[in-house]
Image (cartoon, rainbow, N blue to C red):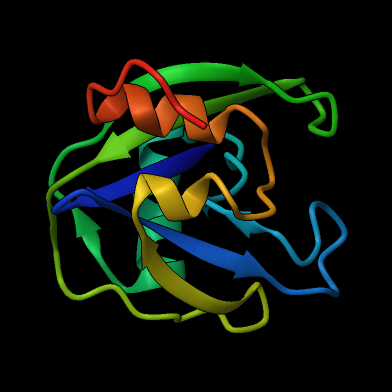
Length: 130
């Protein structure tokens, strides 16, 4: 599962380390795997604390993406627009950097999933992209 962290017309993405097995050296949302006995929402809250040092106030499911690289083929994507704390790269072994991007900038990035651009545009109410 993953989260689109949105604030002031920008989304926070992390550049995946080139050593990562899945989607190396591309920009991605933050998130991870659901542990046994954990809901997707609880896993997302845990991952955001571990990776960014923040506490999500609320998470809203945006869409479940198809992702054949994942064991169950499904990737729930949530929107998070309120949190406690200041995001920082708390997992440099996973992400070499984190950065806020506008939609125009995101359209030009190498992304972990091709649907990210249209989903981010939808979050901001934009009908057309690229």
